[in-house]
Image 1 (cartoon, rainbow, N blue to C red):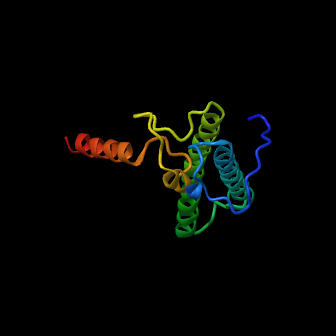
Image 2: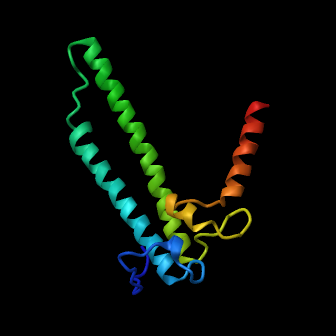
Image 3: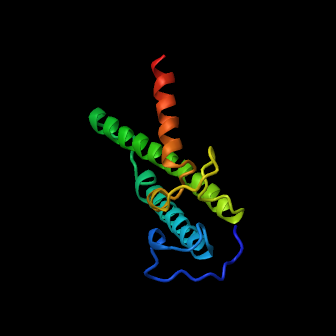
Length: 144
């Protein structure tokens, strides 16, 4: 876990309007809190799924159509939880990047990622331009 931080983020803080230095202490703490809150929400949803859906799922239904429907719902729920597990891992990696001061910088170019992009996708590791290049390369190689 990260060390306690004494930086206070004002209630009405908007990192896109911050005219200070990129990734100043308030901006870093804003993103740290946003990531921690997102992770907590995902974990809460996961626990609800385990409690409500997976434990209450009766896959041994006498009717074949009901059983197939229940198994499909169960599989979909498990896939969703697996995606969320991977997302939690990316959130943890982003928090570590905040701690080592590499958060907010493109892994490919080293340039700052736009604050608007980080606010919309706080786990982003590539600038918009680098992400678009990456996606174009994937399409080119997928079509080969």
